[in-house]
Image (cartoon, helix red, strand yellow):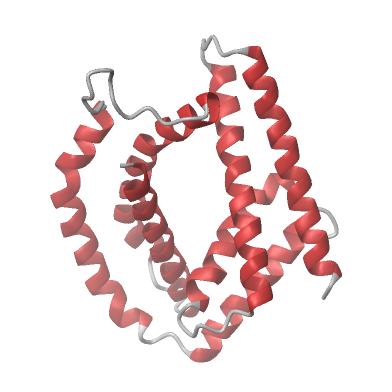
Length: 219
């Protein structure tokens, strides 16, 4: 279901943050090569979930069943199900290689990596949000949130800001991808729906600017 696919993708993003931390600490570590099996799962799960997200954005609801009550199973879903044993085997192999490397990351490297991400986020959001880099900003926020759970030391103010910002950027991203797909294809989308979608994108951008201003302005 959609929520399970979403959680799979969240867990892969956590693995990405861990791998990037090890790469930062151990320059010769081949993080990209290790991440490929995880990326494969991430993309295939996204290909299934994306349809449901887009349908929800255009119709306001998720349609999971036919009139007869039968759940609609798409070819991407069937492929994903068939690949699960391979997914499990590949990620277990990669984790066995990654775990000992992770144990070698120093406290100082961990601290510096988090600090670097904080600086990256601020550079992309101030004095005005850079919308061309906004997706990278979201990735940096996720890295901070996921890795800070190791020590559970993320200030409450930062938790609230990052949660609001990450969610808003995510909403904007889904709508922007949908708009691009509609423009590329021959979809007979309702003009009122598209107009509403564009207005919603503008609203998200305004909220991103407001959140950044309130957070950094109060520091």
